[in-house]
Every structure is written in C-alpha cells, then in structure tokens.
Image (cartoon, rainbow, N blue to C red):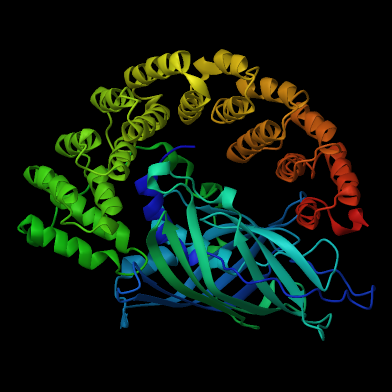
Length: 630
C-alpha cells in the first residue's frame, strides 16, 4: 500500500464529518407479519425536484484538554432527477442554496467559501437508495467536495433487497467500511416507514494502513451514536433523518481527533425555487469519483507568497500562528499547513531550526505529523534538504524519520536528488531494527514516488526501477521480499511483470499474497491474464483473497465492468470459496457486470440462495433486483 502518510492524516481530519458510528446491535426483531407489504426501495421520475432543509454540525478537538472548534452549516439541499439509467438507479443534479456557516460561534462571511459549497454536483442513487457515486466539476474546490460528499454519506440509507424488519448493510466513508444494522419500527406503515440505524465497528482491514512505526492501521473508537428517520411516502429517499455521533480517531497511541457531529434533514414538500443551474446543467463537464481525474495526476502547486504580516514573523511567531489555526474548524489543518509552508518558502534559514526543535522535543509530539506535512507542501530545495536531513537524523524518532520519507515521496517538484535520498536510506544497515524500519519506509516511498513521476520524469523512474530490481533480487527471507514486492506494487512498474510471475510460484503463501497485491497498479492487460489463471489454481485462502482483491481494485479504479475472462473465473471460484472476504471480492466483480451480463447476474442469484453470511446476501442485493432473488 502506498504510504501517503502526511496527506492521508490531513485528509482524514478534514473529512471527519463523513465518519459513521458504532452501536451494539439490537436484539432480533420479528419479520413483518404481512408478506404483502411492498418492498422498501427508492423510486424517482426524470425531471422531479426535491428539497430538504439541511443542518450539519461538527465539534472537533485534538486532545481531551483542548477547547473544541465548532462548525455549523444551515442550508437548503436541492435534487433534480436528470435521468433514469437502464442499468438501475438515477442520476441527480444537486446543490445547496441559502448556505449559512457559523464557525466558532460567529457567522462565516467568506463569500467564496459559500459559493464553493453552493456549486452544483451530481450523484447516482441506486434502487436500494445507496449513493453509488459522486461527480464534481474539475475546477470545484477540493475542500467543498469533501464536505458535501461527507454530509451526504453521513445521511446515506441502504435498503434491503427483500423487505425485512431488520437488516444489515455495508457502508463506506472516507475512513473505511463498516456494517450498519437497520430496524423498522414495530408500527411501521407502508406509507412512511420509520427506522433506526445502528452502526457497527469499522472493518479493521478497510482502515488506512500506515508504516509500523506510525502505529500500523488507524483506529476509530465510537463513543456514542444514534440515527432515526422515516422513509418518504412515495419512496423518494427519506422524509426526515437525524444522526448524532461521537468518535475518536487514533494513530497508534496518539489521539488524532475527537469529533462530535450531527446531520439533520427534513423534506420541504411543495418547495419552489430550485437553483436555475440544476435545470441547465452540462453534465458532461463533471468527473465521477472522489476527485477530478485531472487532479489525480497533476503536480501540487507551490504555496503562494506569505502576506506581509506573516512574512515578518519570527519562527516562534509563525509556529504560534500555526498552532492557533490547527483546530479552527474542518479546514484548520489545511489552512495552518498552507500558511506555515508559505512562511517557510521565504524563510529557508529557519528550516534546520524547525527540525532541531522536533528533535529536541520543544515541539509537541502531536504536532510533528502536521509539521512534516507543512515541510512537504513548502516545495523548495531548502525544504527538500530539510526532509532529506531528517530522514537520516538518528536524533529524531523512528516515527519522524518515516514521516520524512513519506513527505519526500509527495513533495511538489521531486527530482533525481529526491530519489537518491530515499535510495541511500533504503540501503541502511538492516541489522539495526530501527534503521531497518526507516529503510523499509524509504523503499515504499521510493516506489510511490516512481508511480508519481513515471510519465514526466523517466530518469527518476529509472533510478527507482533499478533500486527496486536490486532489492527484489537480493532480498533475504520472506520479510525483505514482502517489502520489496509492496514497493513494486506502489510503483506500478510493468517491467516487473515477469518477476511477479516467478514470485507467484514461491513456496511461501505470504510472498505469493504480496506478489498478487503488487500487480494492482499495472495495466489490466498485463496483470489480468496472470491473476485469472492464478485464481483458479491457488490453494491458500489468503493468497486467493489477495488475487480477488487486486482484480476488484482494478475494476473499481478503471470504473468498468469486469472482463468476460474475470467473470468466468469469478463464477467458477465463487461456489466453492470458503473465505468470506474472498467471496465478497468475487461478488463485487460479478456485480460490476450484473446489469449487462446475464450469466454474472445468474451466478449472483445462485450464490444468494446458498450464501450463509447475511452481509454477503446484502452485498448481492446491491447488484440484483429483489424480485430476481425470490
């Protein structure tokens, strides 16, 4: 997995309004006594307009002793149904109007921020009411996209393929995946059924993975949660919904954020005055996915020059300004690191002092990850030199040196010098456990750097390739081999395809599993034939899981149905597969083509009737209509 640690941490903090919650599942409820009740589903008509009063609130703090930072939003949410797709579901144009923002108890006066939140976007709603995907104008504000998608994901409702008094649906947000248990009220009517939603623990394997020295996987503790709502009488999503959540996000033993949030929605029947832009929308200019396609491959911009007052500060003053802005609402980390990066870009002489302060402990440990993010964003040669120096500085903690490696992989303008800094550290003395951890983090970062610059800076990619090739050939033992394979997976370098074919035959299941994961970023035309043939022969469940996950990830990333060869292999494997997670990946592969491929749909129907895990039955219900599963 790519180690984009500083950027990842910032994104998670900014996206916490999208985080769901944990409650213990309720006791089993009775199934509806009347089987004739109509199924629960969403139904819309093209041209239909819907309006909701939306209120969202979040309160965040970085520790139990810090004062919470409050952000409140009040607006009208508009939907206009653009089209019903033959594959199932509808495309909606959506936007907010009359946005009011209150931050820290005072009204937010920035018109640009309100305008960004009021920009139209698209979403796809499935027949089970799931939000299948979001689309934004490539020029739209990234932070506004995160906030809008987060608020809607917090209000997502997923209905069962067959009407039940209680069901479980798999949700996914900016942190990971979890199961939510729904219960209909005992007196629920066909007109407007009332329901509650209880959230299960995040699935550990879906949470972001960090290098071991940064704590391994993220951890989310949910302290309280409740959600209650009613479905619309005409099956047009919900009539009203209220959610309340309190959670804590940890990085190892460090508290990253303590967040309380709420989202309230209420249908405004008969509302008029939808934004004119929704009726005149050019849907062709929108890009589906979590970020515009162009944004994924473009190089980050260097920070703008600092304002005169900021530029005049000493380092102490700049750090005080930085600390005061960190908790300032959902954009606190983004704005604080941008300002500090701007300051450092015109004060390169203070960068060694900043690193020395982290080494000496005068800067709190909880700030180190965001300080490294600011150094990454600075993008100057002095900042790169500071990060390279930190990478080799044994006076810093192992965790901080790994942060330096992750920052170097993502600096705005990497060069051969960047690659050589990572290569030198990747060759460190492996007999020292701490040096070995930093060396592994550096090799993983080198692979990710290679993937970033492959098209634009082939000389950097060539350096990375040669180092990864040497490490793969010279690896001693399964642990070293696994790290080398993970770095190759980060790079997506197709020149390693033949080497991975060899590793697919390794005697160690651990090595074979990492080899399967290492194919994930390669072109499907290169990796798919190997993975398809391998899936039908592999005897180890962990390795089959890696193969199926890699195929499913490629299908998701390329936003396409699985190929006929993959569908054939998935169908052949699914009926006898014993591993639950592998079955889930195989189901998603078949589901990607279920709307257009009758054999894939039939395989899912057959699996639904023999499946023993309720969650996987729910997953199948996402791809096959309820009437076909009876």
